[in-house]
Length: 365
Image 1 (spheres, rainbow, N blue to C red):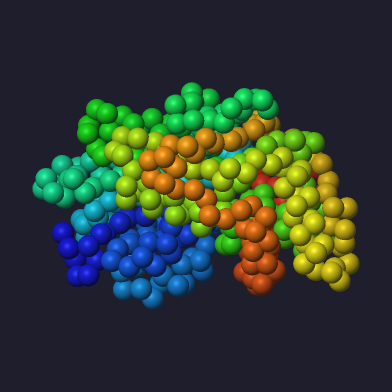
Image 2 (cartoon, rainbow, N blue to C red; image 1 turned 45 degrees about the horizontal axis):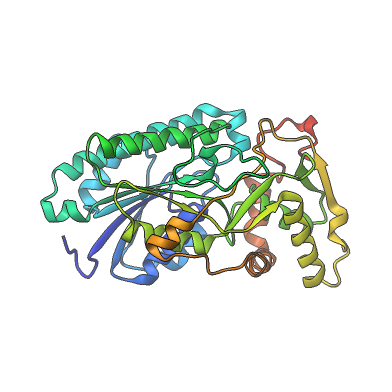
């Protein structure tokens, strides 16, 4: 099983995505683990986030659609993984409202293909290799639906109640992973992560969009009255937790990964504005809060997400290491220092509006 100095050989799907790239950087930093990044390189891929890993002899990229069974089988045969961490997904809620079938295809069918290929591969391993093998599925807190304002946070045993086509497709994949474990015996772990932010996040997501709009003096489009609550998690903390669960999590279990920082969308935007006021004293857009605009709400917009992470703390001794304000400030600084990266994206593949909503909603103001 030992291939050169790389004792572990991990397939990471979606490794050119925001969280996947952070995870691969974390794995490569640790040494002794080879990584095969299986990624379709869609519009949201950020291959630049992996430039550090690119020079590592243990890092390999396979441009592949996870729905391509023959391609996936070929990668398994040639790479001989000791485990797989599956992050590849269509992940934008607004886009799932506009075009749900692509989400079902990638998130449900793609996961089923990976499970099926993994299981066939697993059955051919010897007993020592089987004991090492893991299929780690990376899911989202959105599968649990919306929390009432005064309710306790979601736990690992919360009921599923997905509301958007995106969260429904992720929930469907969760159930497939459970079935392959309980009925077929594939050793799986599942994680549910909360809203993640940090460097290299694609500009269509909430925090980078607000930072970029503010830097450009554009309106900051906040849905509804901004009262929707999210639990914010820094991407480096998320990557660390994923690796801990993959290496040490109990087979058949699921774990919540949250930042323990609940904020309304309005409060999060105000924090961004005030940090920018302090960081760019000569900005013509100060105070940046003047740029906030409340726009038509997203259909079926979940009111609140929050995760109870006590299980992860208790069993694996994991806690987030970055406070929200510190992480947000370093993220803002990163976007200020990496203008060419996001300006190129805005000029080519993405115009900067809220995706998936009709123009008349005010989303593209």
